Picture 1 (cartoon, one colour):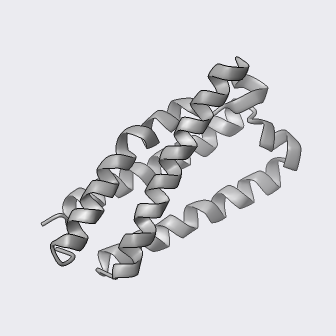
Picture 2 (tube, helix red, strand yellow):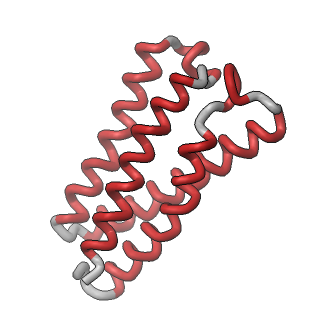
Length: 126
């Protein structure tokens, strides 16, 4: 029953995460300059691979994947909030804390993903 809603929210979150990486590169997020473009992309690729694996196991109705996906969604909400607060406090988007626009998607979709994952757990992974 909730699998379609979970899948939609999860796919939006994953697409937003890809867009977030592009936004950080385009806006020259300070970590890109600090660690180098190659390392930054490698780490972000690995950080995308983890929730993709969680999503796969959510589709297989693995309880642990639901719980880890809730943590993932919470982290992404905090990521979006952090980018936006840091940009507002410092006044620096370019060469600063780029990622706030895609971070808004995390803030909006994350609670829905958490809600539907919890509903899926409570209703026996349907």
